[in-house]
Amino acid sequence: MSKPMLVYSSSLSLIATLLACCLMGCSSSNNSFISLATKEESQAELAKKPVSVSLNEAQKREIGLQLTAVRHGLIHKIVESPGQVQPNAELSRLVSTPSAGRAIEVKARLGDMVEAGQVMAVIKSDPIGQVQSDLLQNVLQAKADIKQQEVGLKLDHITFDRESVLFKEQVSAKADLQAAENVLEKDEANLVALQAKMAAYIKVAQQRLNMLGAPPDSARKVIDQNKIDPYVIIRVPSSGLVIERTINPGEMNDGSKELFIVADLSQVWLVANIFEKDVELVKKGQEAIVTPDCIPDHPFPAKIVWVGDTVNPTTRTLPVRANVPNPDFILRPNMFARIKVSVGDMPVTLVPRSAVIQKGDRTLVFVHTSDEIYEERDVKTGADDANDIEIKSGLNVGEQVVSQGGTALLGTAMQTAEGRGD
Image 1 (cartoon, rainbow, N blue to C red):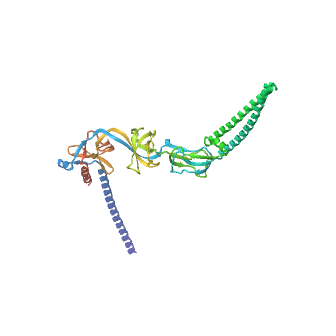
Image 2 (cartoon, helix red, strand yellow; image 1 turned 60 degrees about the vertical axis):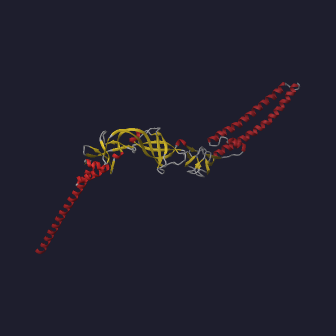
Image 3 (tube, one colour; image 1 turned 90 degrees about the horizontal axis):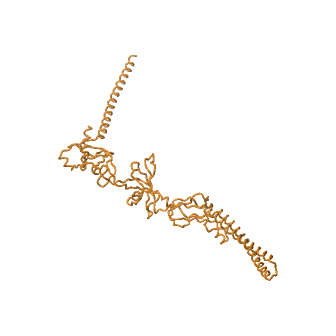
């Protein structure tokens, strides 16, 4: 019995020893990992801190180091924003008709360039046909009544003329002449009334036809041709591009919606959103340049015609709109383009463009802090031109910055930072 117990005890001792070793090894590994991570974090923190570089006179001459003072000055500021080409709504035409009926033909397609007066569609309108049918019946009846009245009026004239002769010859009494005259005058008045009645039929019918979308001469045309014509021809009022079509052959039109939208693209809109920081700089009436993304070497002159009143709370932008002449119809609706608004010369803090260095996601300059020391300084930049760049924050007027030799200084600064992190 004692031998198995010994084996068991030995096994337990061996397992305990192995566990202890594992725990010691894991602890050592973790400590190494933590030490390495701490070192990397420390180096990252050090890399973010400004680095000072010391140069002697020989080193300055070798890299061609030059200093320039930070100064106040004027810079021509341009506000830039992406945008989208849209039809000029003031030059767009809604093509519609109050004529209810079925589309027999639809000649204009989406994307067609159409000329003023061109036929867009033909609609057969039963309401127009009914008005025309009623008009024909009324006019035919009125014409028959007028014809009958004219025949009776001729007989009245004959009777009156006879009674006049008999009265002069003292054959008939004056009462007979007066009776014939009264009948003549009455029938003449009736004829005038019948003629006025027919004219009224035509006028009222034309008014009803106008309300239904028929041409202004359709009533007279129906009478002259003695047949109804229920077809309404829809023509485009001005030349342009068909940017919307809402009816197809065979469909019914109820007279309540536009059938086509035709845009005159000789002038278009560029709709853009200006960032909140530039809101005060962009004004109605300012000149601008629009450059389509698909034709970057073809700028278009433009002019700001509208600036919105409310900043979008989500994007923090303000909508603006510019008129863009487009005589060759190059710009089309929904094209993407960039707008550059020239807002004039602005007083700003300036340094030479050559003084500003990009280091990863940092924008920095080297500031001369003492006779031999040059220190990195993070800055926020703004507008620029061929020679200078605006400094929005990070520098004070009068400070000396490195305007030549900054790249060589950056290399030295990076070496210094690496050495500092070891």
